[in-house]
Amino acid sequence: MPVSSSGHLELGKVLLNVKNADNLTFTVVVHGATVLSTLVVFWREIWKLFLGTLKFKLNEETHYVLKLVVSMIPVVFVGFFLKDWVESFFTGNLVFVGAMLLVTATLLGLAHFFKPRVARPVTYLSAFIIGLAQAVATLPGISRSGSTIATGLLIGTDKKEIARFSFLMVLVPIIGANAMDLMDIKSGAVQNSIGAAELIIGFLAAFISGLLACSWMINLVKKGKLIWFAIYCTVVGVLTIILGA
Image 1: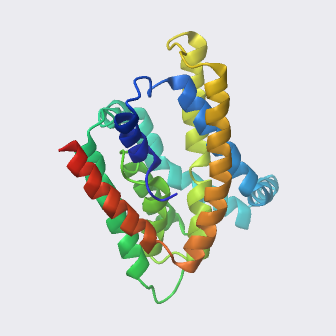
Image 2: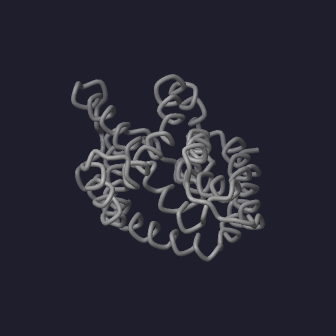
């Protein structure tokens, strides 16, 4: 949902007094479930893109995959060169999280009221711009789906297309990040202190909610109902700032 999962996780840590919220194994399991739910929802599109690229021609599918690759460049740069800086914001600073939720609300509000004259398909340039929004959304409180969808709408991308592109563009970065985390776990660099039952519950919760959220979001974007999420982020953002202060 376009309300920032990372921002809500930071808020949840404080409200629930969670001491072990940075457990890497749990993060890998939950992100893996999120990826799996997205694969289930978009399996037809992904299979079509896969078959199209296997033809080794610059067809429609190959161009779409290349646009997805272009969109990933900014977040890959952040992951390799700014990872420590981004992680420095995940310290339970609720004032910062609340402020970023207000940024998300502003983007969603602008996207709701902006009406482009002509809806355009995703281009290589728009893919990179949307990718920049995804990179900024690594900060807690800025929604990844919200910022990418809103940015796409603000630059005139077709609303039926931007939702699909937004969900597909995050698959490889999450899988890549999970692969790196799995290497840390396998090497013994980190220790898991969460039981199997909790990991299974977290996986199922993320998978089921991911299925519902993906399907629901596609329909909401098509209908142009993002304003309700803007209102929600505004209210939660203000309350979070007050709580943090």
